[in-house]
Each structure stands twice: as structure tokens, then as C-alpha cells.
Image (cartoon, rainbow, N blue to C red; front, side, top):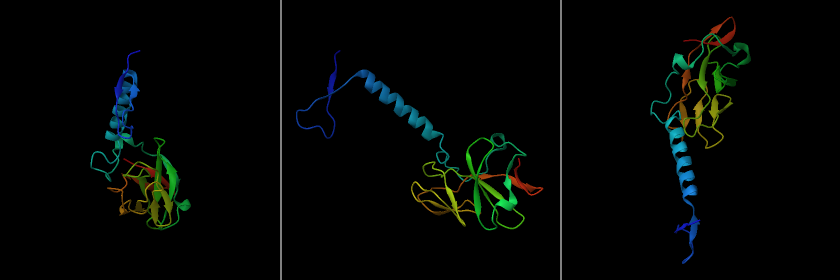
Length: 157
């Protein structure tokens, strides 16, 4: 097999590193895949914090009982599409819901009292509004449409 030497930063003087075309093509393909995934990330379109489209949100699905969410804080839930979500209880009779995917690097945020904490890079969101309180998150969590029906927090259009 005929390999061409490729010199890279960190190679010592006169040291040749041999890489096959297959390795280069495989790495290029992997890079393209990462770029495609990044293009689909929640923060890539610059809109972050918007309301999730009704096309991507099933309606009438129970997320949790309102009584299971302490007033003034939030709990983690699984959304109808299988992704992690947050249900908050701003008042005794109301609920709010958000995607639990951090708008910085797509880690899952964790409820802690009135805050939602991203364990990866330290972003902090307001648990009741989804607004960024501390970066590096660039935008609010995506809001989901919900209502309280017979004591259950349900997805709506």
C-alpha cells in the first residue's frame, strides 16, 4: 500500500506520520456528520427559546400530576417524543413546560429549586420561565404548550 507522509503539529523534526486515504476520507465523513448534527442543534438556528411547533408536539398527553410539582419549582419529565422535559409550577393552579435540553451544548438540565442547572458547563435557567440566568447558554429553553386538565399537566397545541 502506498501512503503519503503527512506532517502535523507535534511531530518531531523529521518524523513522518503515514495516513491512508481511507483514514482521511473516514475522518472527513465523520466531520461532515458532526457538522450536520450541529446544524440541527436547538441553538443553531438562532431562534432558541421559541415555542415548540405543534407538529412536533403531541397534544393531550399527560406529563405529570400538578400535585407532584411543588409550587415555585419544577420537575423532570419525559416528553411525548421521548426527549427530556421540565414541568414547572409558577402558581398553585398553573404549569409551564420546557425542553430540558440546554441551548449551549445540548446537555440535559436538572431542576434544583427555582433553578434549572446544566451539569456540563454550568448554565443556569429560571425554572419557572426557562430564561437564562447564567451562561454560557445563549438563549432560553424552548417552551412547550401545556395546560392543567383535571389535575394533570397536559400538552396542548
